[in-house]
Amino acid sequence: MMNRREAISSVALLLGGTIIGAEAFLSGCKPATGGPVSFSPKDIAFLDEVGETILPATSTPGAKDARIGEFMKTIVSDCYEEKDQKIFMDGMKKLDDASQKKYNKSFVESTPEQRHDLLVALDAEAKEYQKTKQKTDPNHYFRMMKELTLWGYFTSEVGATKALRYVAVPGKYEGCIDYKKGDKAWATS
Image (cartoon, rainbow, N blue to C red):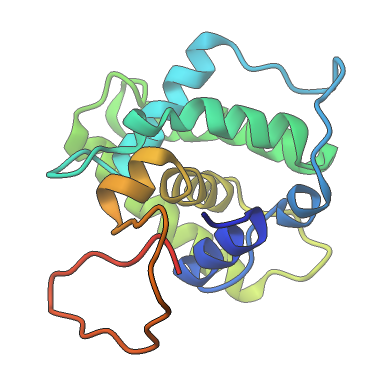
């Protein structure tokens, strides 16, 4: 079984860098006690839809199956610094406003194709922002949502056992295993 540090490192490799909030997670998150963020069931359902658009169900379960909205709520509430919590919460509104502006309907009311197109545009915006971002600049809200979706999904039971290859108790160490095109990546090492 992977420990937290290995799981975060694996997801960071998938993302090509670091994960926002990972430092706090590695040192141990502390549950918020009436802090600045509060997620409603509607917010969690919204985040499930964002996650499902990023990682939709196909022949494997999607982000909703991993309860990604609950995962995001927990990490943002318990592990993010207050400034990143605010960016994330404001980002949910910005994402919904962008959908309203582009399609005259909320993100949740939009078609799967509209949701996909909007998130592709936001992803491009976030990547462009990262190129010139200074260390003191705030994080981009969509990058946070995407990172949390990937992190939460690939470290969840359904992500690790259905989307990745998983062996609960691996046998001997094999440093070189043939890979065939189309094989799933390993969830265990």
